[in-house]
Image 1 (cartoon, protein in one colour):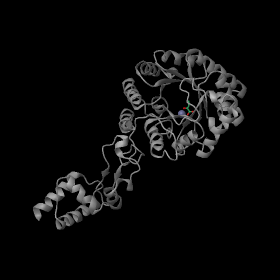
Image 2 (cartoon, helix red, strand yellow):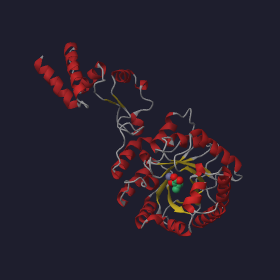
Image 3 (spheres, protein in one colour):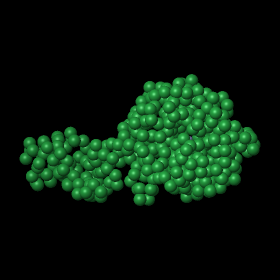
Image 4 (cartoon, rainbow, N blue to C red):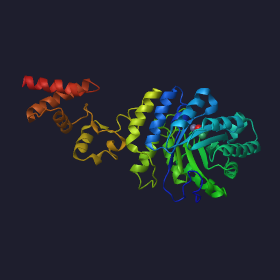
Length: 398
Ligand code: KIV
Ligand code: ZN
């Protein structure tokens, strides 16, 4: 890519990757994840603070509520571009433009399916008609706004020559971002990286647009695929907080951001996200959607910086690099937690008691440790209160 005059365009050798957050659109499409207008505005405010480049606020034609939330987000957001989704129809595109009227940086995101199975069964259209609709929809969107994203729905199951023709048509009609989604979470990282390389090489005007990845997690590959797409030349990643989204979800924003930060040697790219707000964003989205975050979720799960085994706790007490590849503070967690359980060792037990204000002699410590182990065998969680009771008892009976 060499053209930097297009809205949001990035030069080819630029390592900056734009973050397009779709928590409020694809994320909200998770069954049961719907949010009220107030909740959406709260999430949008935090996404803007987080440094997200584009917030996809919803699908304006879908319902009056969706129209209202896109309009309100558009009116309110100060820094990010605000995108609305529209199918390849005049009504959708015009409604989307109306919802974005007050946005400082509006983006219309229009899409149509390009795979044989979607064209035949879902759209019931011939490929040549779909191609005409690509041009017509992007042209119409460009008549409303300068920043237009075009997506080839089910792009990864699309026949390559046809995909290239569609991408060329979209760019010719004025699309500034080209998204090739892995709509059904089907592709593998090597294939996705190659797909971006091939399309960018084969489409003559590909340098006029930014390429984007959009991955679903049906095989648990959404983040790996997104990063592979970036290696293949994409410079926009579409993702959601906590990875919420249709079916198994979308690529998780926090994982994309921290992978680039933590492994800059292997992934020489960066985003403008303020990672210290990631945990806050995760908690907010979990609260407003009522979707719990799994305990072992990368980056934001409650066990992401917790250590229970004696060997790990001993290592952590000697040097945090032994078992942590990023600091909890870097993602907004106050500190590592050494969880006291049946796998914990004496080193961590002593440190924990010190933290609780106890300094026991060797014999009392050993005694208390043995009683703690008995307790931990019986109880799933040993809380600070349990330890205090146990040690007080030890002191009284000494
Ligand atoms: O997964 C998908 O293909 C989508 C498009 C609408 C971009 O969400
Ligand atoms: Zn999607």
